Figure (tube, rainbow, N blue to C red):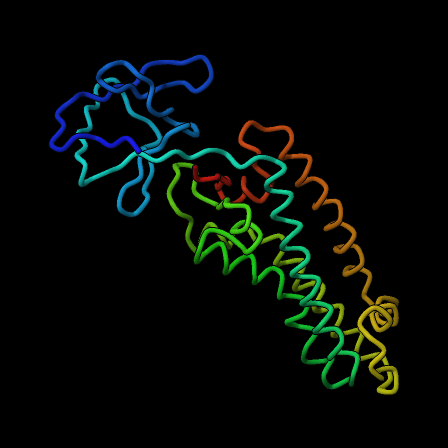
Amino acid sequence: MPTLPQNSTANWRCRPTPDSGLTKLTPDKRPLTACGTLPRRAIKTKRLLGMPQMLSDSSVPRLSESDAIIVDLRLATFGQRIAAGVVDFILAAIFIFLMGQWCSTSKNAASILVVPLALGGSLYSFIGHALYGRTVGKYILKIFVVRLNGSPIGWNESLRRSSVEGICGIVWAIGLVSAIYYLPSDSFHGQGWSALYKLLTPHFPQYVRTMLQAYGFWSWSEFITMLFNRRRRAIHDFIGSTMVIKRV
């Protein structure tokens, strides 16, 4: 891995490029990073602060080996993001299946467990990204979420990324609780989540049904958005000001 020499006093400047606006150059004129857009190489500080979003021609930052090292960061591909999503979907499905099995045993159990059942997926994504920048699926695919300048995301960015999913989870939980209220106790006899859910859905309020249908369109729009922008960002990435990268 290339590193910067200690006590380097070389000037680091930017020049225009056709696609990225400005390119940061080493003293021997080799391109190092793109300023203001995703770099092929990024500067990683002790806190993985990444590169500055813009360096002017008049700026002359001086870095030493103790301040930074050079690491390769690349955008995650569409296939990698989909594969990570499939892994997380399977984990969420297993969680819902197990919780649903317990919900079907009694009305009292269902009244309590449907809330974590409905919110478990969004909380899993929110906490995983806030603490580690990734979920289990992203860990397996070796990709993770960062800010647009390459630095790790925090609770704020993770909350914004998961906001739509969280709102839908809350609405779904409200619909489940209200539907359980209308079902008689003898409807819960351990028949499993699939059979129980068929009994619950007719009792959903209309706004819950509308929200669930809208969330289906939202999910498809996420995939489409990733296909038509250079950084493969989904809508929730635009909301959270994040992108997904793969460390090389």
